[in-house]
Length: 216
Ligand code: DX5
Ligand code: ZN
Image (cartoon, rainbow, N blue to C red; front, side):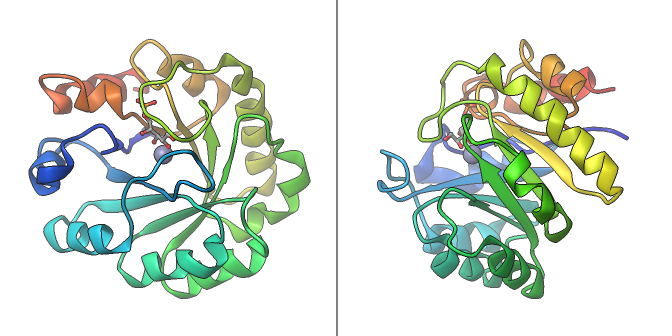
């Protein structure tokens, strides 16, 4: 199985998002970082921008909600046509109910964990999910250094997912580049967010293709 590359637009030019998304034709999707300045100390964009993005791209929209009260807001992103909606388990009041609501609205349901949040307490939730996002930096900003300390959790998550036998994607997000993706592939991740490595390059799509080759 090949790997999936879902570049983050966090470090792209927000004044011309449609053009920026058009610069990564080889990508499997577009990762959109929603931040509310409460769950993380940064503020980005929200539902109206996602609705506008939906209108200008057919690519899979992979929404990463770094917000408090995802129980209230996440379903609206599914309603807006996002194929995948990720909520942080640290913020969700009722993650099972939320995952079911997302799926009932036709979206893939995904749960994110900050670097210090263990997967084991949530192992029984995996059957309710289509993806687990393991943060490999503290959420909030692009351009941070990859945290090697998350690698054992990637391995443990892969083992839990394989034991379940379903098709739960294991996504990593933060500090992913050609220098770090190999370690994550070896640990068992299959879906990769890269922000600054892609949109900081002169040719973003070349970086997407180079990242994908690492998984071939
Ligand atoms: C960080 C975001 C990431 C970020 C990744 O909180 O969730 O998606 O954009 O950016 P890089 O690849 O630069 O670490
Ligand atoms: Zn993200």
